Amino acid sequence: METNRQTVILFRTKNTDFTYDTLYDYVSDSKAEDILEAVEYDKFTEFPHSANYIIDEADRYLYEEGYIEEDVYYTGRVTPAEIEVLQKVLDLIAKNHNNDNLLINGRTVHIPIAIRKEDIDYFNETKRFSERLIEWRRDVYKSSQKNTLVAK
Image 1 (cartoon, rainbow, N blue to C red):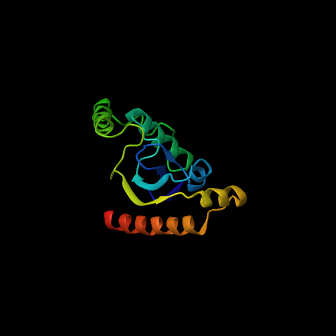
Image 2 (cartoon, helix red, strand yellow):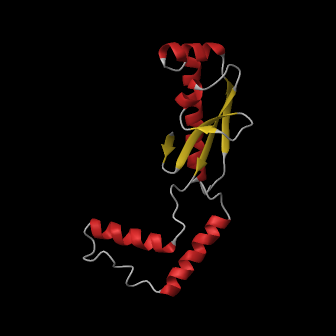
Image 3 (tube, rainbow, N blue to C red):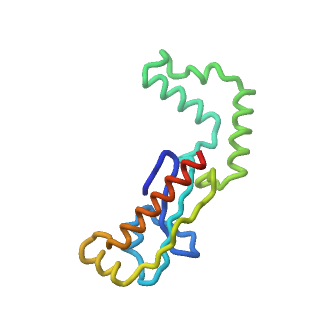
């Protein structure tokens, strides 16, 4: 999986939602004439849906890094009312986004390409991508970087 801060590029066949983390995984599982697309999206990883979890993690991190003397610094200071407000915010975020990935900017498809039999044969023989696929991947990354810079 290729990443740029929170931006992730996945690979998939056209007209399906099934994605592959890497181009290598896709090509090793592909058939000739499949249409390959790169899909870029931003996501929160392992988004915690519990206010208590967030507070516990803050305590753990600050304690382990030596910023605080006790490992229940926030737990002892955050009021139930404040926890309730934080939980409502988290619930609102979860309700309005895909719960698995919590998409921020949605998906952008870049530069489809058809996989040829020669690409698959070359990959199976060498475990490397054909020059055509390498060039396509470069174009995808360039396009992705431009879109990321514009979006941020």
